[in-house]
Image (cartoon, rainbow, N blue to C red; front, side):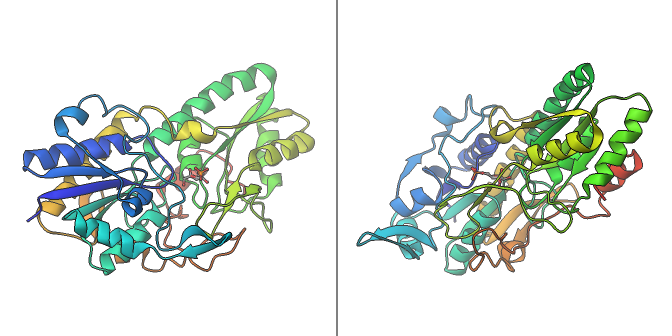
Length: 378
Ligand code: F6P
Protein backbone atom coordinates (compact mmCIF):
# COMPACT_ATOMS: atom_id res chain seq x y z
CA UNK A 1 0.00 0.00 0.00
CA UNK A 2 1.60 3.24 -1.17
CA UNK A 3 0.85 6.34 0.95
CA UNK A 4 3.81 8.64 0.58
CA UNK A 5 6.17 8.95 -2.40
CA UNK A 6 9.08 11.15 -3.45
CA UNK A 7 10.34 12.31 -6.82
CA UNK A 8 13.85 13.18 -7.83
CA UNK A 9 15.03 14.74 -11.10
CA UNK A 10 18.64 14.02 -11.94
CA UNK A 11 21.18 14.74 -14.68
CA UNK A 12 21.18 17.46 -17.32
CA UNK A 13 17.82 19.20 -17.50
CA UNK A 14 15.31 18.79 -20.31
CA UNK A 15 12.01 20.39 -21.22
CA UNK A 16 9.35 18.15 -19.72
CA UNK A 17 10.70 17.58 -16.20
CA UNK A 18 7.83 19.63 -14.74
CA UNK A 19 5.21 17.91 -16.87
CA UNK A 20 6.35 14.51 -15.52
CA UNK A 21 6.28 15.82 -11.94
CA UNK A 22 2.78 17.18 -12.53
CA UNK A 23 1.64 13.85 -14.00
CA UNK A 24 2.87 11.97 -10.93
CA UNK A 25 1.42 14.46 -8.45
CA UNK A 26 -1.98 14.65 -10.11
CA UNK A 27 -2.30 10.85 -10.30
CA UNK A 28 -1.14 10.57 -6.69
CA UNK A 29 -3.69 13.10 -5.58
CA UNK A 30 -6.50 11.24 -7.34
CA UNK A 31 -5.52 8.26 -5.19
CA UNK A 32 -4.98 10.04 -1.88
CA UNK A 33 -1.19 9.65 -1.97
CA UNK A 34 1.19 12.33 -0.63
CA UNK A 35 4.00 13.53 -2.91
CA UNK A 36 7.37 15.03 -2.05
CA UNK A 37 10.29 16.19 -4.18
CA UNK A 38 13.99 15.88 -3.36
CA UNK A 39 15.86 19.08 -4.19
CA UNK A 40 18.64 18.75 -6.79
CA UNK A 41 18.32 15.06 -7.54
CA UNK A 42 20.37 12.49 -5.68
CA UNK A 43 22.06 15.31 -3.73
CA UNK A 44 18.70 16.05 -2.10
CA UNK A 45 18.27 12.38 -1.28
CA UNK A 46 21.69 12.35 0.34
CA UNK A 47 21.13 15.56 2.30
CA UNK A 48 17.53 14.70 3.20
CA UNK A 49 16.46 17.90 1.51
CA UNK A 50 12.91 17.70 0.17
CA UNK A 51 9.70 19.67 -0.18
CA UNK A 52 6.03 18.77 -0.18
CA UNK A 53 4.58 18.75 -3.70
CA UNK A 54 1.07 19.90 -3.08
CA UNK A 55 -1.17 19.23 -6.07
CA UNK A 56 -3.22 22.38 -5.52
CA UNK A 57 -0.16 24.59 -5.39
CA UNK A 58 2.09 23.01 -7.98
CA UNK A 59 -0.26 21.50 -10.51
CA UNK A 60 -1.26 24.80 -12.03
CA UNK A 61 1.16 26.64 -14.26
CA UNK A 62 4.00 24.14 -14.62
CA UNK A 63 2.93 21.93 -17.52
CA UNK A 64 4.44 24.24 -20.12
CA UNK A 65 7.50 25.39 -18.18
CA UNK A 66 11.12 24.47 -18.78
CA UNK A 67 13.58 23.50 -16.06
CA UNK A 68 12.64 21.57 -12.95
CA UNK A 69 10.77 22.95 -9.94
CA UNK A 70 12.80 20.58 -7.75
CA UNK A 71 16.15 21.24 -9.47
CA UNK A 72 18.45 18.56 -10.82
CA UNK A 73 22.04 17.58 -10.30
CA UNK A 74 24.58 16.56 -12.93
CA UNK A 75 27.30 15.49 -10.53
CA UNK A 76 25.80 13.57 -7.64
CA UNK A 77 26.68 9.89 -7.94
CA UNK A 78 25.98 8.90 -4.33
CA UNK A 79 27.63 5.50 -4.87
CA UNK A 80 30.88 7.24 -5.75
CA UNK A 81 30.50 10.68 -4.20
CA UNK A 82 33.21 13.28 -4.17
CA UNK A 83 34.13 14.46 -0.66
CA UNK A 84 37.09 16.22 0.87
CA UNK A 85 38.82 14.47 3.72
CA UNK A 86 41.86 15.99 5.40
CA UNK A 87 42.36 18.32 2.46
CA UNK A 88 42.24 15.43 0.00
CA UNK A 89 39.55 14.57 -2.53
CA UNK A 90 38.20 11.06 -2.10
CA UNK A 91 35.22 9.23 -3.60
CA UNK A 92 32.89 7.48 -1.17
CA UNK A 93 29.83 5.26 -1.30
CA UNK A 94 27.22 7.29 0.62
CA UNK A 95 24.21 5.28 -0.52
CA UNK A 96 23.53 3.92 2.98
CA UNK A 97 22.81 7.46 4.19
CA UNK A 98 20.28 7.85 1.33
CA UNK A 99 18.55 4.58 2.24
CA UNK A 100 18.35 5.71 5.86
CA UNK A 101 16.70 8.97 4.75
CA UNK A 102 14.07 7.12 2.72
CA UNK A 103 13.30 4.80 5.63
CA UNK A 104 13.23 7.57 8.22
CA UNK A 105 10.76 9.61 6.15
CA UNK A 106 8.71 6.53 5.33
CA UNK A 107 8.70 7.05 1.59
CA UNK A 108 7.04 4.05 -0.01
CA UNK A 109 8.48 4.72 -3.45
CA UNK A 110 11.08 6.95 -5.12
CA UNK A 111 10.60 8.07 -8.72
CA UNK A 112 13.88 8.66 -10.52
CA UNK A 113 13.63 10.97 -13.53
CA UNK A 114 16.86 10.66 -15.45
CA UNK A 115 19.09 9.09 -18.06
CA UNK A 116 21.44 6.16 -18.06
CA UNK A 117 23.57 7.20 -15.06
CA UNK A 118 20.53 8.10 -12.96
CA UNK A 119 18.86 4.76 -13.69
CA UNK A 120 22.05 2.91 -12.84
CA UNK A 121 21.93 4.38 -9.34
CA UNK A 122 18.18 3.63 -9.25
CA UNK A 123 18.94 -0.01 -10.07
CA UNK A 124 21.59 -0.11 -7.33
CA UNK A 125 19.10 1.28 -4.77
CA UNK A 126 16.49 -1.20 -5.94
CA UNK A 127 18.92 -4.09 -5.44
CA UNK A 128 19.43 -2.82 -1.90
CA UNK A 129 15.73 -2.92 -1.13
CA UNK A 130 14.28 0.48 -2.00
CA UNK A 131 11.08 0.70 -4.03
CA UNK A 132 12.19 2.59 -7.11
CA UNK A 133 10.49 3.46 -10.40
CA UNK A 134 12.49 5.16 -13.16
CA UNK A 135 11.29 7.47 -15.91
CA UNK A 136 13.58 7.85 -18.96
CA UNK A 137 14.84 11.39 -19.52
CA UNK A 138 17.47 12.90 -21.80
CA UNK A 139 17.53 15.11 -24.85
CA UNK A 140 19.97 12.62 -26.38
CA UNK A 141 17.25 9.90 -26.54
CA UNK A 142 19.82 7.25 -25.72
CA UNK A 143 18.29 5.35 -22.77
CA UNK A 144 18.06 1.62 -23.49
CA UNK A 145 14.77 -0.33 -23.71
CA UNK A 146 12.47 2.58 -24.58
CA UNK A 147 11.36 4.04 -27.90
CA UNK A 148 11.79 7.59 -26.66
CA UNK A 149 12.86 9.69 -23.70
CA UNK A 150 11.09 12.87 -22.61
CA UNK A 151 12.85 16.09 -23.62
CA UNK A 152 14.11 14.67 -26.89
CA UNK A 153 11.27 15.93 -29.06
CA UNK A 154 11.71 19.49 -27.79
CA UNK A 155 15.46 19.37 -28.50
CA UNK A 156 14.78 18.18 -32.06
CA UNK A 157 12.26 21.01 -32.57
CA UNK A 158 14.74 23.62 -31.35
CA UNK A 159 17.44 22.20 -33.64
CA UNK A 160 15.04 22.08 -36.61
CA UNK A 161 14.08 25.71 -36.08
CA UNK A 162 17.76 26.66 -35.89
CA UNK A 163 18.32 24.86 -39.21
CA UNK A 164 15.47 26.79 -40.83
CA UNK A 165 17.10 30.02 -39.76
CA UNK A 166 20.58 28.93 -40.86
CA UNK A 167 19.13 27.90 -44.19
CA UNK A 168 18.03 31.43 -45.14
CA UNK A 169 21.20 33.18 -44.01
CA UNK A 170 23.32 30.47 -45.69
CA UNK A 171 21.44 30.85 -48.96
CA UNK A 172 21.74 34.64 -48.88
CA UNK A 173 25.50 34.65 -48.39
CA UNK A 174 26.35 31.48 -50.34
CA UNK A 175 27.83 29.82 -47.31
CA UNK A 176 28.03 26.40 -45.73
CA UNK A 177 26.18 26.64 -42.41
CA UNK A 178 27.20 24.07 -39.81
CA UNK A 179 25.07 23.41 -36.73
CA UNK A 180 26.66 21.55 -33.81
CA UNK A 181 24.01 19.84 -31.69
CA UNK A 182 24.18 17.70 -28.56
CA UNK A 183 24.43 13.94 -28.73
CA UNK A 184 27.30 12.55 -26.78
CA UNK A 185 27.11 8.88 -27.69
CA UNK A 186 24.09 8.85 -30.01
CA UNK A 187 23.15 10.92 -33.03
CA UNK A 188 19.36 10.96 -32.67
CA UNK A 189 19.04 14.75 -32.40
CA UNK A 190 21.38 15.37 -35.35
CA UNK A 191 19.70 12.81 -37.57
CA UNK A 192 16.09 13.66 -36.85
CA UNK A 193 16.63 17.43 -36.97
CA UNK A 194 18.55 17.03 -40.23
CA UNK A 195 15.45 15.46 -41.75
CA UNK A 196 13.08 17.96 -40.13
CA UNK A 197 15.25 20.94 -41.08
CA UNK A 198 16.23 19.88 -44.61
CA UNK A 199 19.97 19.55 -43.97
CA UNK A 200 22.30 18.22 -46.66
CA UNK A 201 24.81 16.50 -44.39
CA UNK A 202 24.39 14.89 -40.93
CA UNK A 203 27.39 13.58 -39.01
CA UNK A 204 26.63 11.31 -36.05
CA UNK A 205 28.71 9.37 -33.50
CA UNK A 206 27.55 6.03 -34.89
CA UNK A 207 29.11 6.67 -38.33
CA UNK A 208 32.73 7.88 -38.25
CA UNK A 209 32.82 10.33 -41.10
CA UNK A 210 35.04 10.94 -44.11
CA UNK A 211 35.02 14.71 -44.68
CA UNK A 212 35.53 14.10 -48.43
CA UNK A 213 32.07 12.51 -48.61
CA UNK A 214 30.55 15.73 -47.27
CA UNK A 215 32.66 17.71 -49.76
CA UNK A 216 31.36 15.53 -52.62
CA UNK A 217 27.79 16.22 -51.56
CA UNK A 218 28.36 19.97 -51.31
CA UNK A 219 30.18 20.10 -54.66
CA UNK A 220 27.31 18.23 -56.30
CA UNK A 221 24.96 20.90 -54.99
CA UNK A 222 27.26 23.68 -56.25
CA UNK A 223 27.14 22.08 -59.74
CA UNK A 224 23.36 22.20 -59.57
CA UNK A 225 23.52 25.91 -58.77
CA UNK A 226 23.02 25.57 -55.01
CA UNK A 227 25.82 27.72 -53.66
CA UNK A 228 25.01 26.98 -50.03
CA UNK A 229 24.63 23.90 -47.86
CA UNK A 230 23.43 23.06 -44.38
CA UNK A 231 25.33 20.58 -42.22
CA UNK A 232 24.36 19.15 -38.80
CA UNK A 233 27.07 17.66 -36.60
CA UNK A 234 26.49 15.82 -33.32
CA UNK A 235 28.97 16.83 -30.62
CA UNK A 236 30.11 13.19 -30.38
CA UNK A 237 30.82 12.73 -34.11
CA UNK A 238 34.34 11.63 -34.98
CA UNK A 239 36.30 11.49 -38.22
CA UNK A 240 37.21 7.99 -39.45
CA UNK A 241 40.16 6.81 -37.38
CA UNK A 242 40.00 9.99 -35.29
CA UNK A 243 38.96 10.87 -31.78
CA UNK A 244 36.31 12.94 -30.01
CA UNK A 245 36.64 16.73 -30.06
CA UNK A 246 36.84 17.85 -26.46
CA UNK A 247 36.36 21.38 -25.15
CA UNK A 248 37.85 20.61 -21.77
CA UNK A 249 38.20 18.00 -19.08
CA UNK A 250 36.31 18.97 -15.99
CA UNK A 251 35.75 17.71 -12.53
CA UNK A 252 32.22 16.37 -12.81
CA UNK A 253 32.32 14.81 -9.37
CA UNK A 254 31.72 11.38 -10.84
CA UNK A 255 35.32 10.45 -11.35
CA UNK A 256 34.45 9.02 -14.78
CA UNK A 257 33.76 10.24 -18.28
CA UNK A 258 34.58 13.79 -17.30
CA UNK A 259 35.08 15.34 -20.69
CA UNK A 260 33.04 18.26 -21.94
CA UNK A 261 32.55 17.70 -25.65
CA UNK A 262 32.57 20.65 -28.03
CA UNK A 263 34.33 22.04 -31.07
CA UNK A 264 33.56 19.45 -33.74
CA UNK A 265 31.26 21.94 -35.54
CA UNK A 266 34.04 24.53 -35.91
CA UNK A 267 36.45 21.84 -37.01
CA UNK A 268 34.08 20.56 -39.70
CA UNK A 269 33.28 24.12 -40.87
CA UNK A 270 36.98 24.94 -41.21
CA UNK A 271 37.70 21.78 -43.18
CA UNK A 272 34.71 22.27 -45.48
CA UNK A 273 35.72 25.87 -46.18
CA UNK A 274 39.24 24.77 -47.15
CA UNK A 275 38.04 21.87 -49.29
CA UNK A 276 35.10 23.48 -51.14
CA UNK A 277 36.12 27.11 -51.52
CA UNK A 278 32.78 28.22 -50.05
CA UNK A 279 32.75 30.25 -46.87
CA UNK A 280 31.61 28.22 -43.87
CA UNK A 281 30.26 29.23 -40.47
CA UNK A 282 29.56 27.16 -37.38
CA UNK A 283 26.79 27.67 -34.82
CA UNK A 284 26.84 25.65 -31.63
CA UNK A 285 23.29 25.25 -30.36
CA UNK A 286 24.30 24.14 -26.85
CA UNK A 287 21.92 24.52 -23.93
CA UNK A 288 19.18 26.10 -26.08
CA UNK A 289 18.22 22.47 -26.73
CA UNK A 290 17.54 21.79 -23.06
CA UNK A 291 15.82 24.95 -21.85
CA UNK A 292 12.44 26.52 -22.33
CA UNK A 293 8.93 25.33 -22.96
CA UNK A 294 8.35 21.69 -23.99
CA UNK A 295 6.61 20.85 -27.25
CA UNK A 296 3.03 19.58 -27.09
CA UNK A 297 4.44 16.11 -27.86
CA UNK A 298 6.78 16.26 -24.85
CA UNK A 299 4.01 17.57 -22.57
CA UNK A 300 1.85 14.59 -23.49
CA UNK A 301 4.68 12.05 -23.33
CA UNK A 302 5.83 13.41 -19.95
CA UNK A 303 2.29 13.35 -18.57
CA UNK A 304 1.84 9.76 -19.80
CA UNK A 305 5.13 8.70 -18.21
CA UNK A 306 4.34 10.45 -14.89
CA UNK A 307 0.80 9.09 -14.63
CA UNK A 308 1.85 5.55 -15.63
CA UNK A 309 4.77 5.52 -13.19
CA UNK A 310 2.41 6.47 -10.34
CA UNK A 311 0.02 3.76 -11.51
CA UNK A 312 2.86 1.20 -11.35
CA UNK A 313 3.55 2.33 -7.75
CA UNK A 314 -0.10 1.84 -6.82
CA UNK A 315 0.09 -1.67 -8.30
CA UNK A 316 3.24 -2.37 -6.27
CA UNK A 317 5.49 -2.75 -9.33
CA UNK A 318 9.00 -1.60 -8.45
CA UNK A 319 12.58 -1.90 -9.71
CA UNK A 320 11.42 -0.90 -13.16
CA UNK A 321 11.76 1.80 -15.78
CA UNK A 322 8.55 3.20 -17.26
CA UNK A 323 8.95 2.96 -21.02
CA UNK A 324 7.21 3.33 -24.34
CA UNK A 325 7.51 0.12 -26.38
CA UNK A 326 6.14 0.13 -29.92
CA UNK A 327 4.12 3.19 -28.99
CA UNK A 328 2.57 1.67 -25.85
CA UNK A 329 3.29 2.43 -22.18
CA UNK A 330 5.07 -0.47 -20.55
CA UNK A 331 7.73 -1.33 -17.98
CA UNK A 332 11.09 -3.01 -18.12
CA UNK A 333 13.31 -4.06 -15.24
CA UNK A 334 16.02 -1.58 -14.33
CA UNK A 335 18.44 -4.47 -14.54
CA UNK A 336 17.62 -4.86 -18.24
CA UNK A 337 18.14 -1.14 -18.79
CA UNK A 338 21.52 -0.71 -17.11
CA UNK A 339 22.63 -4.24 -16.31
CA UNK A 340 25.74 -4.15 -18.43
CA UNK A 341 26.64 -0.61 -17.46
CA UNK A 342 30.31 -0.54 -16.67
CA UNK A 343 30.50 3.15 -15.78
CA UNK A 344 33.02 2.70 -12.98
CA UNK A 345 36.36 2.01 -14.56
CA UNK A 346 36.11 4.36 -17.49
CA UNK A 347 38.94 6.85 -17.52
CA UNK A 348 39.24 10.47 -18.50
CA UNK A 349 38.72 10.97 -22.22
CA UNK A 350 37.11 7.59 -22.71
CA UNK A 351 33.43 7.05 -23.11
CA UNK A 352 31.81 4.75 -20.60
CA UNK A 353 30.56 1.40 -21.72
CA UNK A 354 26.88 0.97 -21.13
CA UNK A 355 23.59 -0.07 -22.64
CA UNK A 356 23.15 3.28 -24.33
CA UNK A 357 20.68 3.13 -27.22
CA UNK A 358 22.45 4.24 -30.34
CA UNK A 359 21.16 4.89 -33.84
CA UNK A 360 21.14 1.59 -35.74
CA UNK A 361 21.81 1.43 -39.44
CA UNK A 362 18.46 -0.22 -40.15
CA UNK A 363 16.49 2.52 -38.37
CA UNK A 364 13.86 4.34 -40.44
CA UNK A 365 15.59 7.67 -39.82
CA UNK A 366 18.84 6.37 -41.34
CA UNK A 367 17.00 4.79 -44.28
CA UNK A 368 15.00 7.97 -44.91
CA UNK A 369 18.08 10.19 -44.70
CA UNK A 370 19.93 8.03 -47.20
CA UNK A 371 16.94 7.75 -49.55
CA UNK A 372 16.58 11.51 -49.86
CA UNK A 373 20.32 12.00 -50.33
CA UNK A 374 21.39 13.35 -46.94
CA UNK A 375 25.11 12.58 -46.70
CA UNK A 376 25.94 10.73 -43.47
CA UNK A 377 29.69 11.02 -43.99
CA UNK A 378 30.21 7.48 -45.26
O1 F6P B 1 23.22 14.12 -21.67
C1 F6P B 1 22.70 15.18 -22.35
C2 F6P B 1 23.73 16.18 -22.73
O2 F6P B 1 22.94 17.11 -23.35
C3 F6P B 1 24.86 15.70 -23.64
O3 F6P B 1 24.55 15.65 -25.00
C4 F6P B 1 25.94 16.70 -23.35
O4 F6P B 1 27.22 16.19 -23.65
C5 F6P B 1 25.76 16.93 -21.92
O5 F6P B 1 24.38 16.78 -21.65
C6 F6P B 1 26.29 18.25 -21.44
O6 F6P B 1 25.74 18.55 -20.21
P1 F6P B 1 26.43 19.34 -19.01
O7 F6P B 1 27.35 20.34 -19.60
O8 F6P B 1 25.28 19.93 -18.26
O9 F6P B 1 27.14 18.31 -18.21
